[in-house]
Length: 536
Image 1 (cartoon, one colour):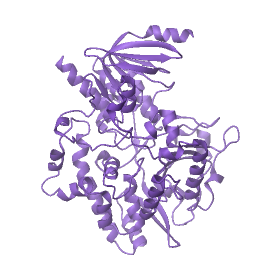
Image 2 (tube, helix red, strand yellow):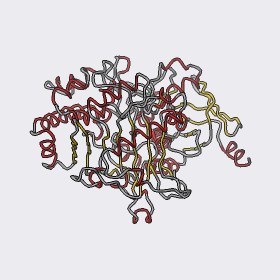
Image 3 (tube, rainbow, N blue to C red):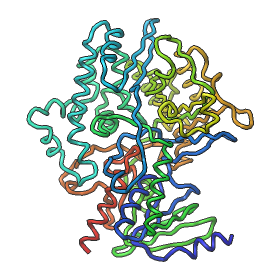
Image 4 (cartoon, rainbow, N blue to C red):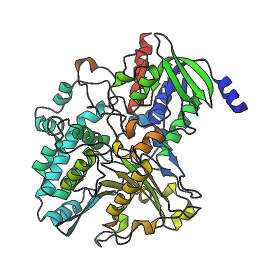
């Protein structure tokens, strides 16, 4: 245990800032604050840094570094990359999406590409018989981008009011605002698009990780949709070269390079005592207790966890349960498609939508909220290696191996609370059945084998996500998604990271404008501290 004693003795007793959790947002905050000359302690309960943004070799004896929990990047501002000097390349995907479907015994499919060619119009006409849905789809994209153009630049600035955000759309922006902020998302989708498959393709962005439906009066679907379509100002999702862990590696490199950041890993925070001038943070490493004082404390963990640590667990309200399911796979080859129209390389290069017809997802939602495992659960599949094969060894690239990651929808935490292992297996089988209905060979036949001869496939339920990376109820957003603007006058001018304690702030997904891989809450928490320091 000498290493433990050395670690404890090497820690200072006082820091300018202590950060709970070394997810990417905590690391972003650490970099900004250290570059400003502040001393920073990052306390991480796991052995490895990165949280939900790390990559790892998860299959025994296999040199494939998979992005385990998060897969794509859209919301990370280029300004953060530039400010911190990150050597990070975000690669575009040529294919935007591939959406197959079976309706009334007929096989339909829609493959959209990102280069703006006439291809997209042609495939819409092939699917629907005319260009009316294509024109409706373009109109909805225009509505999205109009709103994104005013929201996107504000995400790493102090909050503006709801009225100000609406006014920035201009005098002709009323329909845009009404369609995406005031009315259920289903209204605009159904008004502009008639085809069920296309409606489903659009609505999936409103369902990622949350349990909702097109006409949900809470407008949760609208908030989820916004966060999925405003990134980069156009909603484009990109692949990080080197995997999601490359972002973590770069942030750690920058943090260590400042000489102002100390990392304490395998350290479980036991309490936070907020104070007027100094706050105390207690933690344990292998049953050995330590504590430090800090002028400011940032919490990259969930707001509910912060409430527990401060002894005010009820202050942060109820937690919406997560509804996501994740499957990581390594394939010896891409499976052949049942349809011969597109190659596997075309279909899997973008987002591959499974069981995501509009009416089909309504049924899946109703089954899930009734406590039933959906018979045909919807999912989205991503192939990192068709855009960036650097995460595989030279050998596996030469042999044509590929990674697939699946994000499953409508699998709420409640379905797995009893017998998680049994329920996880049932869910896995249903997702694989969903994929296989569009393939000319079972995807199981394409799975690589690890060093022990086991298929390279890993499945995780919302309960697993709660246990592995401490997402409350498996919610990838830490709780209810908020609007990306001030919802009350008291929030105007704030950074969206504030708590009831003047020196304790959120810097993760629980913060306003949190969620996804963005670095925005980390940036905003750092800016809040700098504002406070200027007042001292």
